[in-house]
Amino acid sequence: MTDQALQPGTAHNISAPAKPPPWNDPVIRSVVFQIVAIICIGGFFWYILDNTLTNMAKRGITTGFKFLNTEAGFGILMSLIEYDESHSYGRTFVVGLLNTVLVSFLGIILATIIGFIIGIARLSNNWLIAKIATVYIEVLRNIPLLLQIFFWYIAVLQTLPALRQSIMLGDSFFLNNRGFYMPRPVFGDGFEFVTAAMIIAIAAIVYFRRWAHKRQDETGHQYHVFYISLGILIGLPLVIFLAVG
Image 1: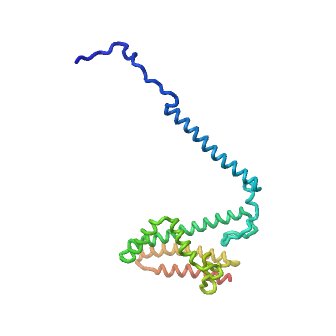
Image 2: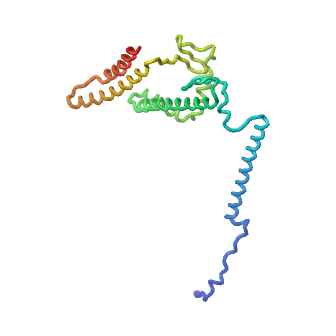
Image 3: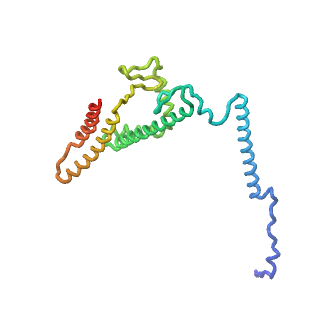
């Protein structure tokens, strides 16, 4: 076999591949398909919007946020701010937002406490406590939250009696399918002094605990930190409460 050398100018005789027609060009096709998809999606949303506005106009329903200034006409059981049926939809929205923030805040704290307790129980040397914690973790973690909500609503709340047949716990607590009702404290004049005393008591407890631990490291003397702290936490606000009446 002999090698044949390429003659000068042979490379120029090799023709370049033919350019495909536009309908077979992948770049052009992708651009066309994207444009068609955008037009179809935009047309669909435009049809929905136009149809909605037309039907609302036929029924005399206006668009915009002017309805936020109209009277709501319904009450809300729990409200962190003043609210009744005569307030506007805008204030109703604020009430719902504040209630959501409150429930979320309390839920985070409660979930943290429960998670900490269950985690410690899971690591317990007590066989029964550890197994109960394990079952609790594995069952609740593997069940979707939505199913848990349905369970508590259908299997628990719906089985409770109606409002007029509420379960009475003493003379002040009522349980029914709408919830659990109890008296709320009514803070009178001077209660801000009790609140300030509570804050001062907490600060004093923190300082006392640090001082007691430092004193124990220096002298070896132990103080009853828990009982003294409990006395400060209860005693100081109680004294201020009795003083201001």
